[in-house]
Structures are given as C-alpha cells and as structure tokens.
Length: 235
Image 1 (tube, rainbow, N blue to C red):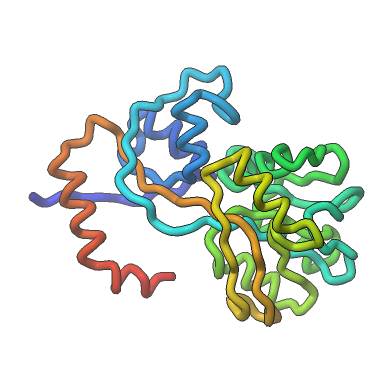
Image 2: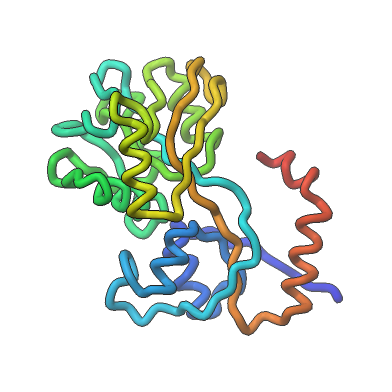
C-alpha cells in the first residue's frame, strides 16, 4: 500500500516524545536513555504525564559522547572542566540530558563550571572564536558540527575515556547508566585527530506510536533494510 511520509524538525528526542503524545508525529528518532526516561517518567520527564505508549522499531546508529575543547584550555579530561566555559546543549535536547546524566554519574557538579545551554552550531562558533573553552555532545560521530570544530586546528577531541582515570570513568558511567557502552572513535574520523578516542555511546532508536498498524511498521522496516546501502551514502 502507498503511504506518504513527511519529515519534521525538532529540538531532539525529548520534544519528539511529546510530539508522539499529541499525535503531531507518528514516528520519531530518540536516544535510548530518553526512551527509558519517558517509559519510567523519570529524568527530564519527572512528574510529567508524558506519553509512553510507544514501541521501538529498530536501533539506527550509535550516538557518541564527544568533548571537543580548545588546545589552549588546558582541559585533558572531563575532570578538568572546573571553572571553564562548557556548552552542554540546548534545553530539551537528548544531548543535554545525556551530558547531565554523565556528569551526575561521575559526581561532577554542574555549578563547578560555566555551564552553557545553547545549540551546538552556535557553540562551535563561540569555541572557534575562543569565547568558550569547549562543548560536550552526545551525537553521531563525524557530524558537521564536530567536523567544523576540528577543521579549525584549534581543538583536541576528548572522550569520556580521556585522562588518567578514563577506564574507571567509563566503567562508573556504564554501571550507573547501563544504556551506555564502550566505544572508540577511530583516529582520523575528524581532521586534526590522528589518535583514537575512548568514550561511550548509546543507541539512537526509531520509535512509533503503538496505534500505528503492524502492516505499516513492517513495510517501513522492510523498506529501510532493503535500502541500507543507499541510506549509508547520506552518512
């Protein structure tokens, strides 16, 4: 059967969940952790009567914790951000929620540094202009924001595993937030990055409202799996 699908933009997975609830969207992309928070009405959905009658269709790609910082900032690991200006991402975004969860898991107080809440695209420009020390993002590796930052030759790419206690930090975060798993950003993923970056990642899921017909979900999934080679050309 023929079906017309249109794409819409949003500020991230949190907003996508809310749009599923109002039926403005029937399908949405969402980080694993955001789905879990909605299911449990916890975290960013604490105390909200959030729609959580959605179904997971499939895992799309890893969304990776990355922390590009100025080489001149002196930051060598997540523990060095005290007193520095760091963007955590726009309010309501998956990335910000995940960054906050990582900081909380490690016991790093958000008040111990100059925490910013702006879009990543704006943060890139501020960091390159040396008006900010760096930013944290939980997003797919190789995306244009980080490419732009690393092309400036002013940045070093850090991950959760950067620094002398990196392996321990990774283990701590995974034990407290088990949707994360160990992940390595291979050398040369970005310009000016001739080193592997040890960090963590989680899945980005495609979810749908539970009242969507099984036939439509099946055909949608079949269409994706039969065209993976084509879809990968967009990465």
